[in-house]
Image (tube, rainbow, N blue to C red; front, side, top):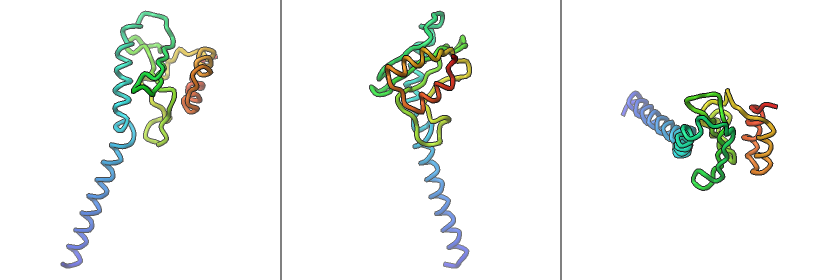
Length: 141
């Protein structure tokens, strides 16, 4: 076998290994790896979308609601289509694959969240520190 064929063979093997690693990484990090959690969150969002559309309930706290281990907080937002921002409060993600490292659904731009209400839930339920910091930066005094 000449040097040209050896180089092409090694290049092809390296390319296949790199591609396999990339696909493995995509399936085990970020939103794809956490798809079951996001699917469960979307189910909750769909359940509460119409149920509370015209009510003034600003916070919905669901303890151990997803898979019996994830606590979910629904926070009212200024949107007719999607009335709640949903966030898992008792865990965060350690890798850089998801913004802020937090499981959340919807936009947090228009939250209706009073700091006093948030502090009361945080004190009673014990939020993950990363989630607590994030929510404290979004509440209004």
